[in-house]
Image (cartoon, rainbow, N blue to C red; front, side, top):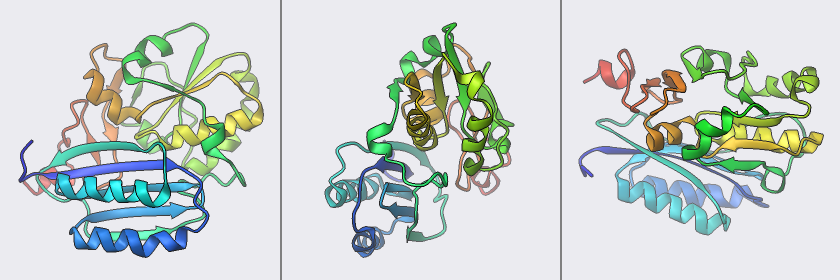
Length: 250
């Protein structure tokens, strides 16, 4: 690992947090002391963030968050870049760490089954599996898995409405869902299980983990992957594509 490169760490955990306002100043203090940049969201349903800095410092922050939240599972993804993709550090309290607007939803208890990246290609090719992209329409436009259903949602808040209108499409199927880093598809599985669907699965770590682990060897992923930082899009080898902020400023 090149110590001069910037580590970009994305993480989330659905864990019940009774007093998120107590965590905010503690997390902010650690982040500022370690000169990190990015955004961290805290809610009663968990924590979600993307930060950049040295590998040692971003890892230290996540370790501290695990201690503060007592999370028994946290999804972490690390990439590297020559520059910070964020401008400053922000820590915010939100009603949800990823907005879905379906009322109280215990994602920690209701979430579906993980599918490991190495098993994803074989799983989504099964005849009784239906694959759904839980991302927004502009993300799907630049890349998706072959054969996946595009709900054509402008925001994640529209996904429950799409589900409600397509109940018959999902009936008697194993439902496999995916998103960029795992958080949206994980929350989607909890919503579907609350509706009574039992065979619900999601790609562990999302598209980014899949591309890293499999190198897209079967070419089931087509196109690029939209990311929510100044890289904008990454290729299947996870490098920023031409026209991204990092490429323009080299």
